[in-house]
Amino acid sequence: MNKYKAAASKELFAEGEVLYAGFSKRNEAYSMGIREAFEKAGITVHAYNPKTTADFAITVHRSLDGLPKIPKAAVIAMKAIHSAELVEELHAKGVKRILFVSARATTPAILERCEALGITAAVACPLMIFGTGLHRFHGRLAGIKA
Image (tube, rainbow, N blue to C red; front, side, top):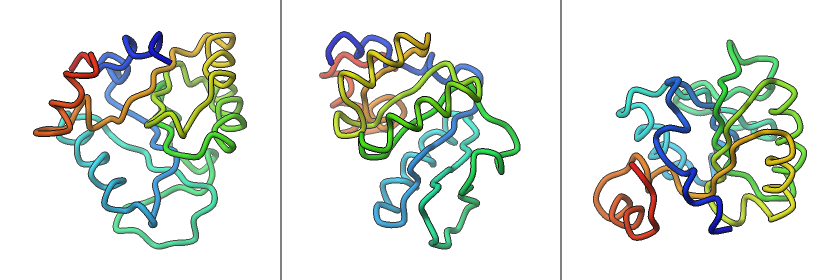
């Protein structure tokens, strides 16, 4: 997956909006941390999780059709088994750039499918790009451009 590292940068989110797929109650502190890092960078976050029934302090959309707008960039924080289908849905909605939060969120086949669909794909935790402290340091070590 190293060939996708170079694409992990702030440039993926240049339009100032992101769809955050997989916003989770189980990992709420992590989800909120990512959301806050994006928002500190001036990026509007549209949280999405089709399987959640939890209540959150923010609006978490349960349907892509319920979003006010589908951004051109997405972050996927779901297991790879769910990411494959989501990539197809996002492509149909016009998404052009996807950041998978970890190798657990994707597979080489999913990354190849993104490439075939013309979607720029990268694998990195958003906190390595937009975070501070240890997260940002880890990003530098991984070659992530901030």
